[in-house]
Image (cartoon, rainbow, N blue to C red; front, side):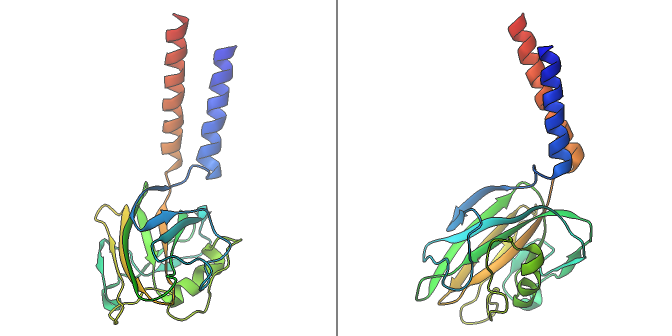
Length: 219
């Protein structure tokens, strides 16, 4: 009876993880100035400031896109000019995780570097003002206030205070080199999530391990 209970419990967990979207992609590493936080109440200008930290949080885990999503970067590479961006789109009905990166220095010119790595492929990055403004309502965390319509909230390319961003060849890591004064730098990152089959295999592997341990203990 105990063995049957364990099997049913693990199988229900596998089914839930595979089809409810709770086991979606995640941030697995950060370096430099980037700090992962829970979604804040606001990322409006002057609401979440730091001269030493760039904040990252999950906006929408396991989101099914109900429209074709336009993004500004789709290919690995180094980006320091608008003309080098690789715009494209993510198909409607794609299930994704959405993340937000926010930098708002307290004062003066601040230059911070860092990187953030995910456990799934990055499908696209949103870095321009218009793209951010257009996606606040559909991709933003519902309880977070965004500076929709604010000028220069996206990355600054080719100016006096240029920003730089790199998408790694394996599509898992974003590296940033940002400069800002009394205004924000913000981007959105959209990643894939594990296929349901992968979650099922993960759950079955856990079940097999549990069964082996129980058999060993019984012996």
